[in-house]
Image (tube, rainbow, N blue to C red; front, side):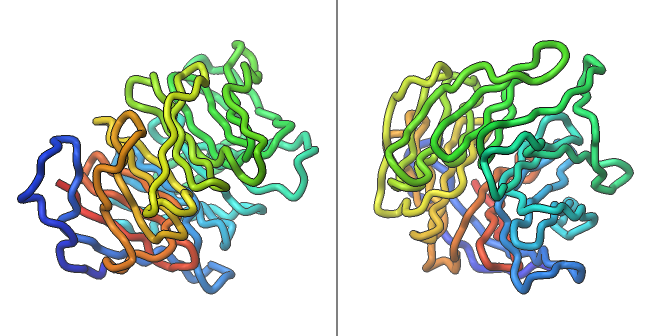
Length: 301
């Protein structure tokens, strides 16, 4: 069931045509009876072309399917804490996990797909070429993004690209690395044309912009971006970033150099945002929260 909050921002003074404005915020409960923890922690979100939403619930070790009205319609229990999620095919997603050790040869993500309205496990990595493969990593897997046939996985200190050789997935290269201390390469997102990669530096409260080859283009910091946890780029190239410590979701320009707008903040009732995604079907922004049983859904213009 949704709860509604009055309009947050007014678009009457809109100057930049790329700038987004929030018309209304709604909240939807994503906790289910089978959850073992008191509160949810929606660490990752993706929207399927069908209009359904899939969220990763870190604390309850579940992946949840939401219908077009953001009601939980199916769930899948996993044995580890899901860290991030990305769409591979129209009905298929990959989910990364937090591991207790980095020196592991276990597969560090699983594949799920929507079949007959239910989330089901896919034990074979199969795509249009009808091949199968598994991806075994020798590094942590925090964030995951799928772009133009390649997988991009962040380890906390590096961004890796994996390509398919016709039989299995192989590391192509480490595109970017920052060993300055803490989680410096957390999550990432691509510009629609694939020329730019936006990467979160959690340790230093930064959004960095890279070329597809991994060359640093720009670094963005702002008092309203503290503890960057989630990043998403809309099909129009609008960059959305949320900060867990600043309790904000902001929009940054395409070059990753300046803030265009604060879309939501603590004064709007937003607390501890950790993931963000844009629903192209409804022109809504979905925000996942830490230690909350609700997601925030904001209508944009």
